[in-house]
Length: 438
Image (cartoon, rainbow, N blue to C red):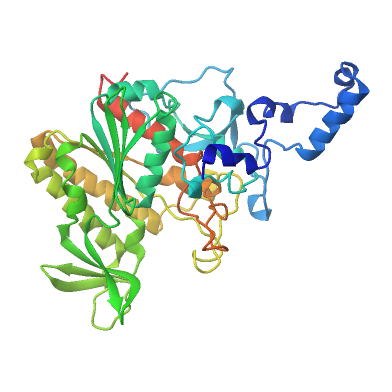
């Protein structure tokens, strides 16, 4: 399916670029009507009936009732912005609504040809659009907008790999789209299962890869009576060689893993069962997902720091991005239909999601100390708090899966959408660590 052509099926897309601003004009004013004939007035009235006026903020349910007026802000580009500072805390902030919506998105759902169908929320029928127009605003500075030209110039001749689960893929697909405004990428490799994918930006000789690994460590799915159970046997002292073999050829790595550790998994070390996660089996110690996440990242980072061919590699860990199902899990009728971000006061900090983030930060700090000896750099891309505030950014029911109707996707992110902010975080981290990033 050609996404660029089939997007015409989505309501209100036909004249997106021409009429997007007209939705907010007062077309019924007397001055306006005097400029046009009665015939044109009738035609335009029909147009407005077909494409109804929509306010700046829309709330889908009582859950989305408007918060206090001082808790959500609007960006006015006519006002001078404060500048990014290398000591500014990017973690603490809030989401603010762009006043000039036409200039706030890096791409549209039909200008980027590489958007996967399951993340193209507008194409799949999502009616509200405000989820695309909120920007992350740290309390003490402004997070600079992503600059595709600057980014591609910095990574010229380099290779960047996203290693991890489907959210690593989601992030890579977002980066593909924001970079495509500067140069169109070429799809150069895809394995049979589409788990390993490589793109090339030929003018900059920049290679972008995604290497799928749900656990980082070696894992096999458990089979009982010939049927897959959905749980896995994880060997915490053995890494998955399908991704480690690529490390010597990679300059920048972005790790992303977490959600698969929440399954009923059995944990092994030296070939011996040492415990499990959510197995509920008598005589088997429950060690918890946090323990497993820690061990997996420890194994990965230890391997990198001992890898002679990997010397000088830059490793970034994107912190845990939580699923946001409401009223049940994904297979229990859980959904996500909010249409605005949470404020800081509405977000609960300190639960399991925050535990996973803390574990990841502890392990990146540990790896950083060891990596300095080999010239390796370890950094954190901390998105957990910001994304906990974006329950409105998931595909939800609009992910186009014909075989799983009635199920919502409240883990991945719409494209375009809040996940594009991860590239702004990534760019800012690289800018702070590399003086020549300009």
